[in-house]
Image 1 (cartoon, one colour):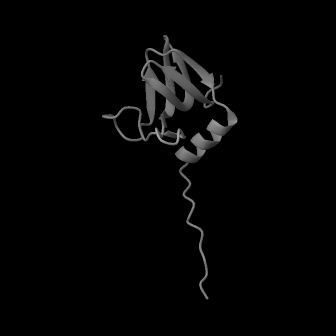
Image 2 (image 1 turned 90 degrees about the vertical axis):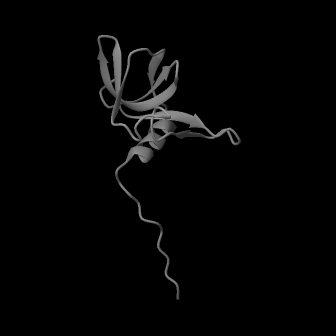
Image 3 (image 1 turned 30 degrees about the horizontal axis):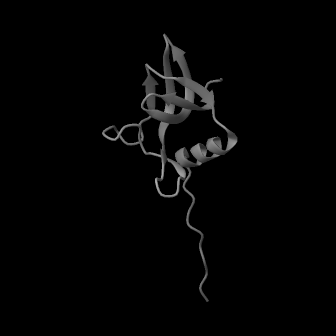
Length: 98
């Protein structure tokens, strides 16, 4: 894995996606972390706006001291993560009423 690759981190507390920043002394760091959540009714996957219910919204980074594994994300997750964390705001589609 390279710095800034979008990765999935599986920990005992759940699954997270973020930009890989490295491993130092066994501690894994990711930037723009997002917890994976699923809609219980539809089963659709999405990203929480944080990594803990009581934590800060949209944290900039997180360090995992205990994790099960870390792997690169598939292309569809990379695209969804990039869209979810992009600073670019797309205006709503305009329409002309005549």
